[in-house]
Amino acid sequence: MVPVHVDTNPPISPADEQFITEELNRANGVIIGVKQMPYVTELIERLTDTSECVKSDIEDQLITVFKNALYQSGFQLNLVRSFDIF
Image (cartoon, rainbow, N blue to C red; front, top):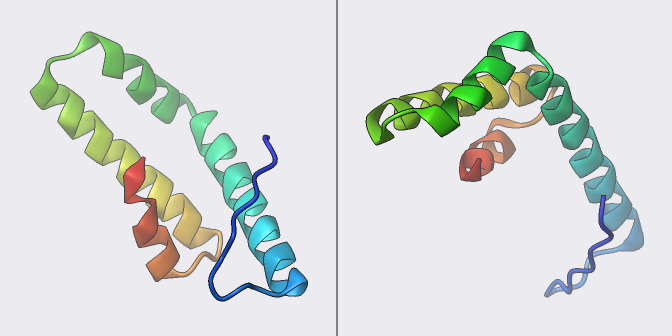
């Protein structure tokens, strides 16, 4: 991981910053775990060898898998929805 500094307006408290950092680290752990699943590994490998139509379908499948894993790990729906950037 790479350390990152973000200026917020209004500033957040050190306790809130620590909580956000812990949640991002926890989300990262979930993502790493999902990426190790054989089904997900296969989908990721298929991304490089497919047409745009198939690629879009695979991306949608991956987004669903990642969102479901995050939700099942206790992340709030509004946070999980913000992970559409995958």
